[in-house]
Length: 298
Figure 1 (cartoon, rainbow, N blue to C red):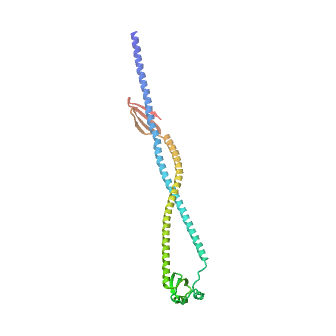
Figure 2 (cartoon, rainbow, N blue to C red; figure 1 turned 90 degrees about the vertical axis):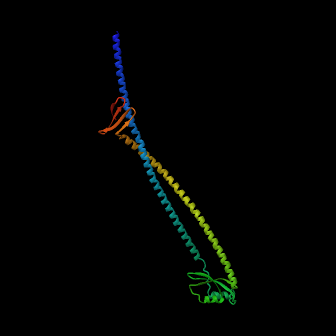
Figure 3 (cartoon, rainbow, N blue to C red; figure 1 turned 45 degrees about the vertical axis):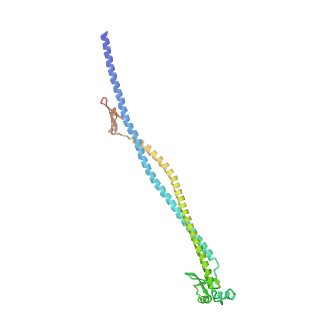
């Protein structure tokens, strides 16, 4: 009886050892497949990161090119608008000038002083040439010049006597004596100087306002251009992003479908070697604990 029990115990021990061996083999098999899968998934998932990085750089290049194109298009459009505005302003100035010329031509011409007219106003008592102190302020106009001068009666008569067709003499004023004439002319000159200074100040003020207006217009123009650029750029960004996502998805899909590894991976429990043979993906896993080698196919 004791002998039989001994035999049964020995058989149970051997069966236990077999089971342990089988379990270890199964566990290593699972481990080999797990290591192979981990290595493959590592490369499989890395494809997406690589493709996204490449496509992001491509997107930035496209966006930079589009931004330059948009800026140039807006600048060209703005310059064309400014040119058109200047042309319209110039045309308006020409029309105003032509209108002014037409209005000026419609004025009654100022009568020119000649011998007959001079004699008539003397006869009418408007002038008394017998007074030797009396002074006449006349304006002498030629095709190229215009000036005001003071003359006495004999001097005026002599000028009228030798007046030619190209010279126009206009009687501006008559003074009882030379001193009063000079006083009046000095007052007129002072008034003209004051008026000129005021006009210069007004012109300077207008120029200052013009500079401020020009600055304001430039700021408005820049704001308008920036708003137009941002609006168009927003639409372009949306289109480029959509295109990037579609291209990225397709490229990841294609690369994963055609993934063929020729690479060694190291883990704490084993080593994985991926390689291709006859365009077929093969894998060899070495388990460190037992030095067992597993050849797998994917």
